[in-house]
Image (cartoon, rainbow, N blue to C red; front, side, top):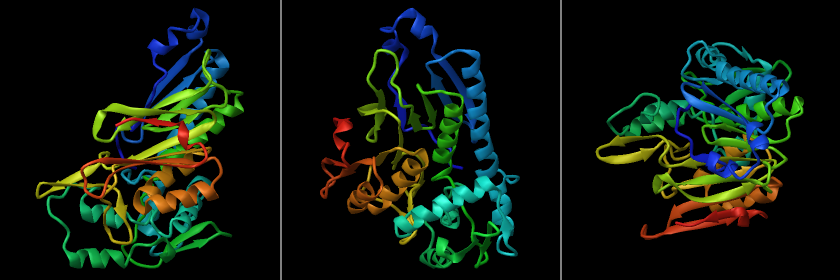
Length: 342
């Protein structure tokens, strides 16, 4: 599971909340948990009774369950056990792992292979699982290409088993697991009657259907990819999820050049020419996976996604052809909700 600083942060800070009445401010419940190797799960609810406390604990346990199942860095996780044995024999998946893999397959097909959770060997080759200081040789890249591709994985839908057809294949769910965890947490909170609040996991966030007191919506800040300690704009949200993929999240420096962690499984090289992609959708799993897929596939794919997945809006920040200016591209019916200035 990838460890990263959050790309977005919720702009409803205590300064903003000071305009609310004292009673309403006191009703704000904020809980932070360290999960997934150190990233922060933040849950903000505008409800501070015993029911809300139970709801937050239940939501946290859902996120922890996803971590226990999907963390590639934990040798005891279900994903690690799958990676270690699925070539030798079919691996029986838990309901949670199977559901994540089915969503992964869905986005693999939608993106024509750009979103590919079987790219773990590629990430290792380029040094994103363990830091390396040399570019991989062409021969090594060509060999890795042979064992990448979700079409090389056999999914038995009746038995819910997975089998690799080639030795050396491995999966990394870092591009979808955080979004899936956020969605599970939000769904769990709703079971307790929660209708107002935010779930934020390392920049993958869900905003509930009802806005905070005295506000019409939630304002989510979008980090400036050129100055990552600042914000370049906001997007207003209700009952929506958001995720951002950027070229500054994780990287390796080889021979003085920085290579971003987002890999194109077709070329087997890091993606260049994009600073950041932000996706807003009704579902947190979708926004997480799509931010990566759009980062790789570009603007035409962004248009396709907005047409095929209702309620989706996409922001792409990239250099222009001369690399001298920044282009801001917006897609989707609600694209004007992105208020960006660079």
